[in-house]
Image (cartoon, rainbow, N blue to C red; front, side, top):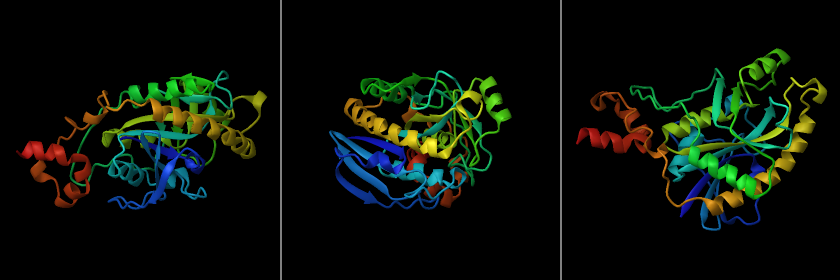
Length: 289
């Protein structure tokens, strides 16, 4: 059975078509994930959901345990992962209520672990194209299928938060070519690549950040109202995506670590080797044989 992972808000798994629903608590070497994973089936696809900020939205973006979340998805057999979240628009044509499937990232975070490696092992994965092109194309196709107002491609600027941008920052990001700005997807993309999962972002536009004087400043009440409407569109999109996914992956995401580990296997500490066995075990076995 195809398995699709989704990280986003709790409303995403309140889908009437989702069957055989169960909550699963997963232990990881990196601590506790944000919450229990919600597992179920949608047609012929197994869905694994995780509320990024925990049920009740308890964690700041900086406090989210991204490593535990991605490791937990890997442990549950997820090979394709979609990160869904609210963003501000940095372009006039990307209006509140629209959906964006970006193809590039700019990292403006500074206080978050973004790799599984370290503690005696070094790996450098390619990240020139941070999103899986095959999965991103499938997400975009599903968005068009359900009639969403879609922008395919674009640059996601990931900021630290939790405060929104200053006007000077917002204008700077626009000058860099940014399309949308959010606070979460950068770490998910990096860690998913290291975990050899396909990853794509579905960005739900809720506001114009603060660069657009005609639209006014960001107001959280407006953000939540538009986000609620976007969640309904995201639910329909996920149903279409689950139906259309290919049974096999044909991209290179599943081989991201193949030539990335440069540490001599004999020098990897046993604890690190054990903790990362889920990710690197097959490669260490090859190099030692």
